[in-house]
Amino acid sequence: MGCYGSLEDKTGCWCPLYCAEETEMYELLQLSKVSFLQMLNALQVTRGSKKRFGAAGALALIAFLALYLSGLYSNMLGSMFAEAGIGEFFVPIMTLIVAPLSLILTLQSAGSALFGGKDTDFLLSLPISTFFVSLSKMSALYLENLLFSGLWMIPVGIVAYMKKIVPDAGCFVRLLPAIVTLPLLSALIAGLGGFLMTLAGSRAKHKALAQSVAGLALFMIFFLGAMQINNLTPLLLSRREEARRLFDTWLLPFGLLGKGVAGSWSALAFAFLLCVLPFLAFTWLYSIRYKKILAGLQSRALRSDYRVGSMTRQGQGAALLKKEIARLFSTPSYLMNCCISVVLLIAFSIWAVVDRKNMELLRAVMGDGWIAPLLLICIEPLVAMIYPSAVSVSLEGKTLWILKEAPVDVRAVFASKAALNLVVAVPALLLSTLLLVLSGNVSVMDGCCMLLVCLSLSAFLALAGLIVNLHFPCLDAGNDMRVVKNSASALISTFGGLLFVGALVLLLVVTRSLVAFWAFCLMLAAALCALAALLWKYLERRGVEIFREL
Image: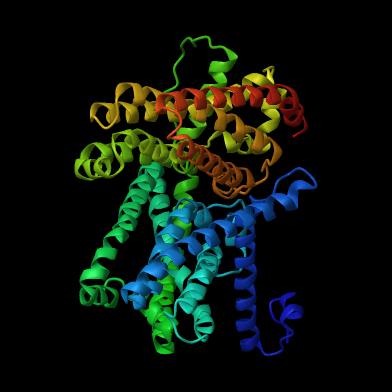
């Protein structure tokens, strides 16, 4: 008896009912595999032998980040909780930390994961249930969260066993279902956020603007919610019964996972059901609206406001920079991921102005001489996470040939792409410095020195990101989100910039007692400008050759 044509060979089935079930499972697995590989495809680069290195290196970087951060926090919190006699809260707190962290890392890519991809029309034309297509995309989002949170939980289990928080070695066996369950929460919330952002874009006249505003609002809500975790530590130390009630009500999934790792298999089963049922329910609701939202995204409004008029003359540099700015503000994924740290930078400056109590406490503990250095240490990582130039070449995609064939100097192309970083960073840095100076937290002299360091750092990282993108381009990704968030150049530039800033922070701490702050800032700014000049020379020579070979 034939069953779905060629699928009979794959299932080896002869019973129609059993074969249909096997075929549906096979379809779901294959669709999930395709969706997940699409998410990883942006880690590939398009330059021959570097293809595998780019993907493996980027994945290794994610693995290192998860293991390093988890090991650091697990060891610190594990020791503190064990000494305070509140070890029962260790695993719930660590799962509560990784859930919003994993969510923030995947929130901006959720909309693209659910509704992006060039093969969507082809998939919907196949004799496959829309629910299965939706479930495969949610499964890919789940696997992306599993990659980070699964590695995060490994040091948690090791520390829990070594600190005698969990007495038996069976915790490593019980840790596996906890690892499988935990990403369901992050994937569910990320999928809901991506669904709401895309829904807002599909109904608005200005789709890109609506998605950007909705994405920014959701990000700030989740970010502020994650910051509330800091308030749990004093609650655990002073009011344990209230903390237990909290993990039995509002934070029930995390409390169940903690009890499960400690030895309760029934708690693990209940936690899994509590996470997987809403996950499947949301997927079903999302599948109902799937085609309608896609139609709204693909629609184009007709314009009737064309007029005859004169155009102003512009130089090559101004025209290219205008093109880069237009692409940034018309691509929500590009704007949100590369520039979200601008919002955080301004929010941090406002906090430093408003929260005078903590600033006075910090001044009393550290002394007046450490306020400006500490503020600089907080601002520099935010500057490092502004990285439009690191993906600007990849975003040209298949239209790169237009830029290459245009009568434009390649050095002007490089200058416009690097200048985009400064266009984004400079206004935020000026506003941030002005707020800090007016609040009285730093002097005018220290504020100017901090601004000079941050501007030179932004210029250096802009050129460095552009060089990384030339060496690790991703010109054939399915959509912009793959390039902006998951590509090798984006990951290398972001984490590489943070590591570089970490080295600068270490240098500041070591030399703080030897050199005045203003002198350190001037020397550091001069060194960064010299390094930026060297990078520009490299772009003028080797960079031009690489660009022409793309």
